[in-house]
Image (cartoon, rainbow, N blue to C red; front, side, top):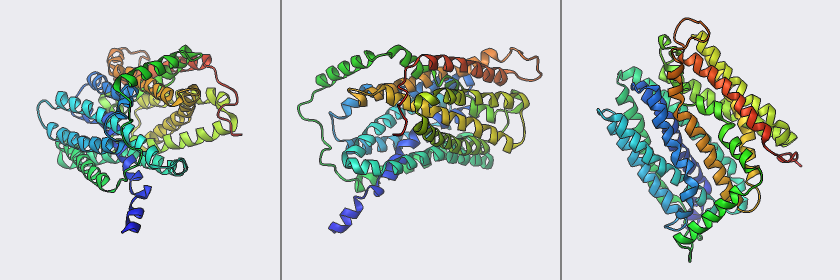
Length: 438
């Protein structure tokens, strides 16, 4: 029996499911919602604005993460959140076929986003409490791999399933309801499974002698020290604006791929979008990130900042050409998306490493969480207004070309916004040796 318990407590029993469960709600909230609402007839302006608000829990996550330490345990928090996420997915599945599906489901998604962000806090905290520093390093690759699997499932597999169901049943609300029922069942089973197999760390308990007032006071002090860091103004502008082209693109790429050709889109099926954007695109993004990490380790962040900024911005022009030519060749579309996402992944490496660089010093863990909050804010605000921008430029024929101009003009606007990325790169300060392998 003791041997069985020891074997059962192996991190392999819970790390894979823990990080798939951490990733799936994030991608459901921020990716599945866009194509689902578009297919169900919601306008680009509405879906980009309201789904943009779904980023908010990740923006403000640092403000309530300290309170997770005060009440209950990390293990208890994450299991409770997984039960609640499962129930929320079920509620969405039942609300989609109703006449009030948009207002009701967007409300449930918003609540679920808070559950998901809290689950992130508790899961990462549990990982650090249950594993020794050596084991944390040993299993970091496993943790990352299964989060990436969640990315492929959430942005690729589930979208492809929804597309197959849409084609088979000719009933879009029913098709997406099935997808969310599957997610609900997965989370309910996962919550039960984790309640049975996850060990109880000895240090997983509320901190004695710490009150909410103390936490608030410490948080304010740490927040103040963050804003007293050197070069804070240029750093914040970089965090908010470096990813501006991608922040504008992210809410409209899937609608562009699936929109009818008469509306300026590429008329792909939902299943094809799941494959090209959620599988080909995700693989390219990961490969770009790996190559970016290798490059920085050899030359340092300062050396690679400008090449990576150009890599992140210039490939956006591929979407302009797709919008102008509207090719029917699926392989050509897949190659264009692959190249754009590879460039983004390569360029994003510089961004993430800069957040680590700027967080150095006292309270680096808390300061890093503030940096990620500004990162989320930088994605949230532009994405909210992407649909409005598309509508505003839809009737302007800049290039004197036939056909709908909305997507063409929008993607050229995205390319133009790349100038802002390059400007914020000019003013940040980086140690020439940072990131370089010794």
